[in-house]
Length: 490
Ligand code: GLN
Image 1: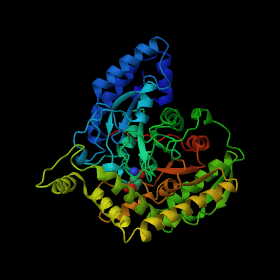
Image 2: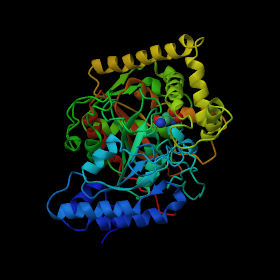
Image 3: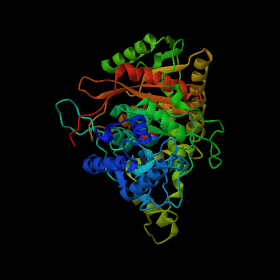
Image 4: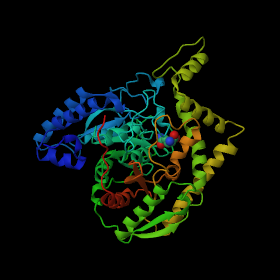
């Protein structure tokens, strides 16, 4: 029998339905792979007992011909999602050993549909980062290495554990969140598929908040079809999240294989950056050619406010973060460092509990929201945000169905290589943050490799709530580019 961990989610679903293997066998195969891959540091909590008992329960259901769309599929969960009775930390010391008495809406929908939880995945602290180096549990290692070298590379961030675990065949899919690129950038760095849905498509309830007007949950998976399967379970209206949208959830999988003939694909000139590596440029041209060969029409488009997206994001996101993170005061959750007064207790707890990047964001956020600077920074950034959104609206109004761009400006870099200057790290999100500012859906699909053998991704940006078109187009790229699997060395 082939190694069960190398199956796609779709193939495993079939194998389970045909009774070729049980969920317990599939789960055990993954638990073994996780144990053998501890050096990647993708998991911050393994839940083998829970996994086996969920698998047994679903096997009993499958035997009776019951079980939902994800019956028996082993998944792993970013540690930003609250999981009932299982420690949830956002990879921050300040949450300590916080064990939620509730389950996030997105994960509860996965369990409702029959999925099995393998454990919780590492991420940047409070999802702030692009390399998974800010986690209090230490960095995650990318299962990819440069040809002929053994430098350890970052998997991207903040959903680095999700991307690394999916690429290394430790789970069949993972949950992730994206505030400025945290699903798409790690997917691009690991040869996996990352879908950031439209803002409001998935409930944010029970997900540790970073920047509430930008945060969105979505899947990281090994194929476009697998991510469409996961999306259907993750999406949906939730009265507990007032920003979640009451719209029927389509059968995303039905979009796979649909003709893209006649679709108009926008190529935005502002994404052609000065000094962009030749191989990214080449990848982009190649991706456009694949879509054209499938019958799509390429059109040049302009998104003139693109250059303001990153600076505006780094005002809006820290502003919201500083407000959201005010709740970590040493009284209600996790860590508590006493002081002589309640004020001193707050100070001690927050100084000790937050890492350097989180402290930086809280300080920037507090500054841009302060009385004297609010208009100059926060208000202005919000206005820029409206202009960015309008750029996209004008583009779609001209009949453009989706926009094709590179997913990242480079391939994965080495652990410890970037970060001395935070702006160098922030530049990773240059192609992804605009989408969050505009609330749009976007998918990152592996499309090629760089000269050193590392995967590179392309991004497709869609109209609001038109994830289906992205799945159809994404699959065309996947068919042309093939699948990307790292050689096992760990
Ligand atoms: N890298 C970006 C940041 O640090 C985005 C992170 C995210 O999407 N969660 O804010």
